[in-house]
Each structure stands twice: as C-alpha cells, then as structure tokens.
Length: 370
Image (cartoon, rainbow, N blue to C red; front, top):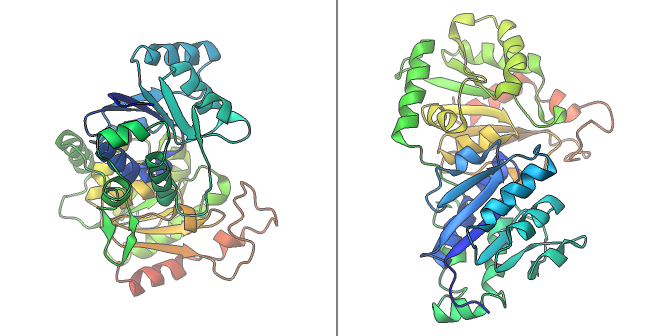
C-alpha cells in the first residue's frame, strides 16, 4: 500500500486525437496528485502537442520504429527517475513491456490478453463510449484502487470530491456530461504562425477556412476531387482557403490545389508547421472541414468550429469536442457504417462518395457556420 506518491509516469502511445482526448484525464489526475511529478511517455509523432499541457511535467517521446535495443535503453533511462506509480492507459503489449522495463514501484492499467501479468493491478478495459469518457472511467477506477487506498485515505481524497467532477470543468453548455480538451498555445508559437501566414500573403484580418485532407487510413479520406470542389465553392463565397497537413499529406494537397479554379484564394501550409504551430494557425481560422483525423481534434481543442466528415470510423467514440460548434457529417442512409475497416469491404466507398461538396456547403450554411 502506498501513502506517498511523488513521481508518476503515464504511458499512452496512441494517436494525436487520442492524446487530446486524454486532456480531461490529466486534469483529474493532477487534482488527485497535486504535489506529484506527472510524466508522460507518448508517440514521438504527436508528443509535441502534449508539451502544452500544464498538468504534465515532462513528456518523453517514444519512437515506435526504434529497434529493441534502443527501446530497452529508453526504458532503462526512465527507470532512473524512480517512479512510485506507473499508469498504462493504452494497454497493448508494447506499452505493457515498456512500463515493466521502466519499473515503477507499483503499476496499474489496462491489461487483457495476458498483459495483466506485467501490472500490480489490472483495470478492466471496456470501450463503449467516447474516448474522453473512456479515459475518465479509468480515473474513476483509479480512485477505487486497492493499491492507492492508503494514499487516498491519508490525503483525504475520495471519488465524491475530486477527479471525476473536476475533470468535467470544461463542459459543453448543452450537455453537462461531456468534458472536452482545451489547448492553449504559447506566445512564441503564435508569433511563428503569424509570420508563416504573412509570408503566404494571408492578412490577419482575412477570414479563412481550413481544409484538412489527411487521414491515417485511405477510407477515412474524403475524395481528392471533392476537396477541390468544396474549395472552389467556398472561395466563390469570398473565403480564403488554407490547406494544412503533415509531410505525408503534401503530395496529395499539391494535387488537389492544382485542380482548383480560384487559385488566388488558395493557400497551402501542408508539411510546413509543427503541431503547436498548426494549433496557433487554427486559432485564427473561422472553421475547419476535415475527415476524422488528428488535426480536426486540434481545431476543436483550440476552440474553433469544426465540420468532421465521418466515413468508416465511429463518431460515437471519436467525434471532435471543444467549446466551438462541432458538427458531424455522415452518410445516415448506410447500414454498413461505421465498419472501422481500412479498405471498403463492399468495394463501393459510399460512406464518403455519397457526401458531395454541395451537400456539405449547404449543411455549413444551414448550421450558420459560413
């Protein structure tokens, strides 16, 4: 039993959206352990965004492509931090082994499929809600932990007066049960973003709409020609159009931009920003239109309006949440979605193909977003 917890390490090697969804979890964790050092081991592709989270003291970047020896040395280095508590909120074999090598005095987390042998206490993994609630449910279970009972008794922490309630501070007015992430961007990143926009010719007073074409699976991407069409339709309404994306999106974005008629209204930042620079850029936008992919969750977290196009992925689990207006666009007439498949099992891709640019522009108008 633990009465003192001064150093905590959390492991989550999931994707950008998942890390943002964990923000209310970290807010609650900080309230449970106000004096502790809280560190995070995160996927190196997305770890930069978590350095803006004030509830986390240190973020360590882990590269999933590292060879075994490099991963082992990484874990052994972190072991020297002498963590008293390790928390696995990801729960796969890689994170289970990594946490075991880091060797906190006590560990708790998601196991399953035999992975519980690496933990001192296993939490049952049951994903049947939005990922934010999934993480907050872990926080509730943490407070019922036998490992931590002495700590909570000594520090007079109960499930009635802290984390679950406190982690719902950022609440959507229309639904008090839904917490959401908020992302604050430091001044230096805002200055970098402003400079990049100015160099492109976008003035600070210009109203611009962001189009994000990416997606970790092919089936999560709205067709390229549709993005070109919607850019033209929005440009005709006198909106500047800014394309964003990571380095892997650059070739696709260049192809789309070349198909657009209103070239003088089009700007392309794809592959030219860090995640925190992207967040600073998005803060200045009127709206983002995107598939279900990390940057749309960044947009929601900085508080701008989003229109998220959902094809194969489950909006019940992954819908963007933020203080702005976040609408979902999906093909409601299909019984085959959400399938969660990386290739269309029926080979028709109707979940995306039947969502025309005209339909989406009309919906944006109806919602008062343009």
